[in-house]
Image (cartoon, rainbow, N blue to C red):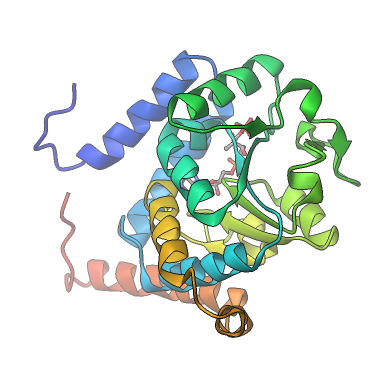
Length: 257
Ligand code: PTJ
């Protein structure tokens, strides 16, 4: 039980959610390590959605609204941390939801689909026989995808993704939106749009941005996308971390929590 006034309550609740998902058998053991890495980067960016993430969120919302076949990909960690946010985002963007796992087992797929359904999802793709199509040149179990989901998608949102698949999806001509707290990861560098933020904050913020931009003329949305520079956004994230560490190290800034 985490006391309501604990200074690190939010972070501890997220950790507990991932551990609980592991105990229930749908978060991979490696997912616990990924969460620890994420916590570390979240510390560095200040555990808040920063301006560089807001830029990426706006571009991602435009890409989702312009998409013909958008898909949200879900793995164990995302199912544990933000199941309701996935469902709300998919509804707002008219996107399909697909389970796609790096450490794939039929049992985990089923359990994740069940978690999503418990949080309001209708159809969940990528489970069992549905993952019958193959992403070329990819050797992890993530190569198996739903033929009517990720395989046919033009825009794929991949929270907590691995670099290989991001690159493979880009080679297939898809727009890849990543959510990754690590601005140095291969995924961050290979994605078309990288939201350097915690999925817990980024997915609801993205759903809001989609609702805000919905109804804007196509040309406006295309303008938002044209003006977006992912390399510049990642450099901004690194400058933010650098400046924050400098201010902390010189006593200009105090940590709260
Ligand atoms: O459920 P599966 O089988 O598909 O496996 C999922 C994991 C996450 C285990 C798998 O994709 C994996 O091994 O990922 P990596 O290579 O550890 O990368 C995870 C990335 O997500 C790292 O760059 C972390 O910094 C980042 N990350 C971790 N937690 C969060 C996060 N980014 C955003 N929000 C988080 N909460």
